[in-house]
Image 1 (cartoon, rainbow, N blue to C red):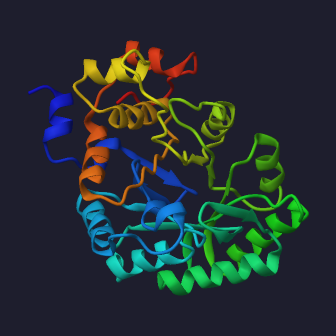
Image 2 (image 1 turned 90 degrees about the vertical axis):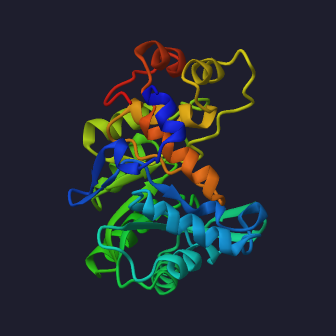
Length: 300
């Protein structure tokens, strides 16, 4: 049995992705879990199958996942509550990241809100729901264009100094915004949309790699409409893998600071995603998938 087949049929484990250190002191396996899908349709309300959502989280821990990304706006609140219900008291070494800065008005509706008092209330609510005294990584979900960004960055600094967050990060930002934030508070992570079919933020990823900032790609499995002649379909066929496994393997190969966080509400999909850590893409595969972007770092 070759390594690609073993990745699909053997027992997967997240440690096959290697590790990454966030903020200088949080070392985790380089394949995490995004908890957005542990909610209802439109990321609104409770999940259709709460018991399966709980099983997904427990199974993720069994398979070596030690980094979970969530947000108070997922549900809102349901994702954080389910994480605590499934996993508290938390295992040693489990890193939980959450986010604040988006208001919800209904399914599929997201509105930036970054005034410091609101961000603090959101963080305090997240800590209660997650049953934590301090969150390992707190991320500004979006920079609110209606609030001076310096005030939002100062709020993140205060959360660290007040002991509410160990590290802080940003989401959907460019290099200039990251640099302005870093003049106020150390930035441990950046979470931008990035996947095989949408490599727009590659220049931000390259900056993060140079600066040692963890890069969490959101929508990591958005592989587009995969036709039989698409690059990802051709690579998947060559390796007897699924397109989603190829998408994850490509992200892991793209940069050593990449920390993919694919999410799902089904155990079977979770196991398929984690099996991607055993998929070894060739240089030919990486070139075909990268559309000219460098395939730096660790090839897996």
